[in-house]
Image (cartoon, rainbow over all chains, first blue to last red):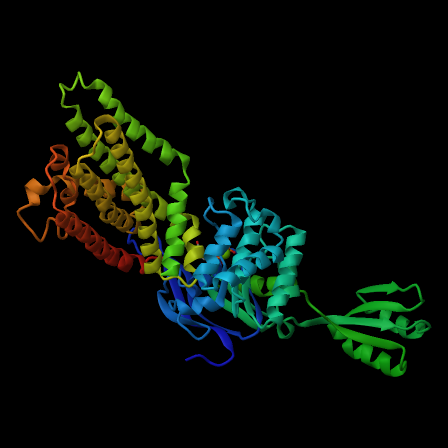
Length: 316
Length: 243
Ligand SMILES: Nc1ncnc2c1ncn2[C@@H]1O[C@H](COP(=O)(O)OP(=O)(O)OP(=O)(O)O)[C@@H](O)[C@H]1O
Ligand SMILES: [Mg+2]
């Protein structure tokens, strides 16, 4: 059953690699349950070897689960027709080296059943979007890592997908490329595409994603809207010029303070000083304003993944 | 069908774009053509020998094409090229059919070119081509499809150097075991292939007419053998975990 509003549903999915009796088996995913809401830009995070690529490969039916099941756009991953609505960028994408970029994209467009005249124009369009028009007639075999990645992105958005699944899309891209990819993802989001991607570049994830899930050793350790997950760690307090009395009362608790050019103050206070800020605001009405300060995704990530390892350390 | 042809197109284009293919075709034709100069050595049998050799060399070309697929498919699977295609709305069976069609088209073009090359040599040397020789080359072309199917099967079930060896063994076996297994009809030419039905070198060389029905039936057997091998390959392939 497809719960309305989820583009990906994973239920108790387990994947064990290796079946030869004399080889060690690896449990890459252990009873993973996860749902990705429609329209979300979902960042799938986790340390190396956590099982992110394994999850994505299971969703794309490239590998088969040991147990459990997954639904993508409400269909089983082995549904070939469903893939007409999906865009997929594998980790370290590889393409036929003897084809030119344009030929390759045309083959992809053919596989995606774009009509012949639509095919031409769409291929030119995506080449333009990923900034590869100038290399359209060059052989893919001669492309650099980042150029290959760009073509990978081009083939993923060729069909205006409903769901975009990207495995480490930022790898290999130069700063321009990263910015362009962000723009591409934002544009896809505006078109109503849901995006599911994994990445290690947390600053970019924080900018792009509205939902995240963190996987560690095959277990999901947290998942939800990024705004709800990142907790308040402090307050950004601004004091107007001439509010030196108010500022003095707060300076003692501030973890950082800065005098602005206009004579006002910018202070950062820890979350446990909230009550004190409140009382100062009451005492000096109109002089003090505050904004909550959230931890960064990086801090959150280390808090979560680190804590898990601590637990294991204690257990051992 | 479109999708199968999209995969096939990638495969045959790749092979037919390699200049070395044309160089080898030219070499093979030149080799047989040059035998004409040595009719003294072959005691006047040079025409028969040339016909025989031309068919043997063309068969060899067909075998090489079939073996080449056992390198191509595992490489595509290992490098992740196949992954990109299979993440598109392309079934695994469609991918295999596309590969087989593609490699068969390449094989047909190459063996066809060699056949036509020999016919031109014969026309130049003897002013005419025996119909039996044309038929012999057509049969070699017919053998391309079942042999490539064997290549596809092994490239799916075995790792790549082994796949090539197994394919070569089965093709050799299929060309040579009539004496051993020929008496058991279901086995030889049924489960195990009988590629000797495509080998009418003796008839061609001695200009014994071959019935067109025979050629048609042999080709049909080849195609149905290829289809059944594909069914087996595909059931293996759809269970396989891809990189
Ligand atoms: N084909 C395979 N055979 C055996 N084990 C594998 C295979 N692929 C992955 N694994 C194992 O499964 C676990 C998860 O791997 P996976 O590639 O999913 O990690 P990941 O989260 O994508 O890591 P990274 O961030 O490094 O890309 C790892 O322990 C890895 O060793
Ligand atoms: Mg990975």
